[in-house]
Length: 423
Image (tube, rainbow, N blue to C red):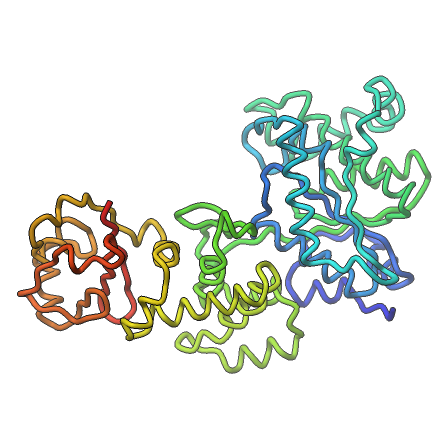
């Protein structure tokens, strides 16, 4: 396989944060094995992990051999990097379940065939029989306490408290790198910028125990232009597991990224080439959303498959179209799934035992409008629809208006949709 310049690829995609001297030269010299670790703290990865997954994908595409390490052992300890408090420890049963789920998700991105086939490894396999006395003799003596104390991940936690368990994490992760170096000829570890301290502990351990050369590369932590946390919504994380985040909501997340974030995200999270992205940027406007659509259409099938992408697109078209008949092709579950909590209002069924005044419904019983006066004015200006039909001030809502016996779709202006659910 012909190698390309992996480091240069990440540079133009705006992903590189730190690079150990000699790393780029090593990758240009020969096909190299490298790894990224994923701690199985949940039974699904979320889009906060995607930058690392895409780094591994680009690494393999450049002609190198990727290892995805699932931390069955390190997950039992808990990484203090970037954390303000110690994480809860998981039972072995929960941890092994999480490991299996994470492995399944990673397999969607990497190619496990060919000359540079990806490999999955679990550090529990080499730690499960490693005795504590052997560890402190064979590993601990090579790294000084002063060296460990100098790491940012330790310094930031000294005031609030850092357990011995967390303090030793960098040694455990460092040994992962050493084990992979010795047994898999793995010469590079990658990770997020918060992992730099843990990664260079591994390169130091390799230097001291094996007198070998090992390398490190970290990517930038993803931030949004408005300062809010990437990958979070009011409802929580955007997960890769469709049971936790539906394909429709996953698709919509990318479709609705801001114009300021789209050029950054399309470089990081897609495999589109530089030329393709530059062409899209020339065609993009805030009205067309060309970048957002290309982003959503590239990453959704990679995570959920092309059938789920097609259904998400169909659902989007139906929800924001004008046809009531098309809208009723959606199931009740699909209707509920399409609306976040901030766009959903739940009311008691007894409210609809008698006909309900629409002004009071929109401006009092829900907060779709801030007041009854604002709701009345919007209706008078022909700016409100219920179940895809324009309404006037005479409209009264009855049980007969409830879709599937429990839903009302309220539209405010051209683009703002809300769901009223009768419990």
